[in-house]
Length: 232
Image (cartoon, rainbow, N blue to C red; front, top):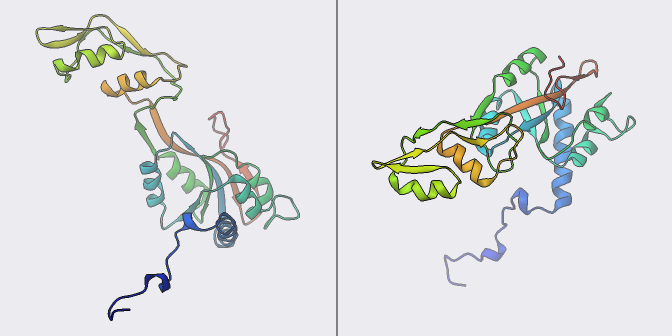
């Protein structure tokens, strides 16, 4: 081999987490969770409402020096905590694990006081445009009149979205009041586009703290129910 050239086949290649065998990733996650249980005084089960990757990064940044967020398969996290009373790392952690359900649930480890943690998370929320498939909680009515900010070239695209629009003196107008969506609707692609065009945000990102486990006494406390009603 010419001098100065390196045989890349002999150079150790760094393997990313996504490239590791599934069994190895599961083992690492289990070990990580068990280490965090020993490190932190509180463990929460949380649920992400209307999650977006960028918003989740903001939440991680907010608590980067005060806790750790863990996502993974619920069954794997349950194995780490202990699936039965006999397997549980600490009292009641098996019961906490049983509260993990769905792809938006995870674990949050922290030493923050319960009151401070709840206060901080309650303040975290951000409105965003709802996407197709989102179930709306209120009716949105668009009033008849000029549509500000839309060029005349948008007339046909707006009609394709089933909006009752006309062009008057070069300005697009809604001929009559129009219901963009009704409470209980599951948004279609067209409805989601209409709401975005009119700058209407119906989706709110937030983190729900559902359950808290206290390392001091093993107490398990419900903070919020699946129906969004506050318990504590």
